[in-house]
Length: 176
Image 1 (cartoon, rainbow, N blue to C red):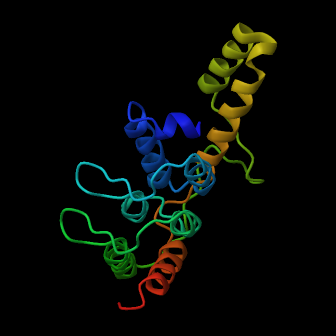
Image 2 (image 1 turned 90 degrees about the vertical axis):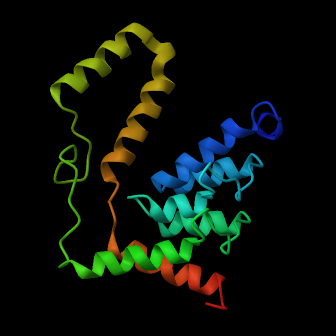
């Protein structure tokens, strides 16, 4: 993967993969993609780095921010509006604190034991895929299940995560 990620022909696609993983707050995928040699300071058309994408996204994650910083992300990088990840984190925290706290909502796909419960249509589609792919589809089904469970367990705009992110970014930017 490292050679493909470094190839000028494929570099932008791999950068997009890192950007999307960061935006989703998926620290494991971010770490994996950084290990491929993807530039942690790559930017979108609006100048947003993966670090800024994570903080601006609805699934901001302190683990993802740490993974990006450990991978060499520049915490001082600004987007085209002149704002850094810390600026966005502080704004998000202020917005969250303006509203009365409410418990993080749980996905309807999770039961009382945090186990995934698919609705009838999704289960039927998965069963159909399992039949069509047979034993060759084991890895696909396993990956699908892992990603689906990860998505169901995701918490959106968790105030604790945003507070941790502000603290991490302030420590990375001692001038602030």
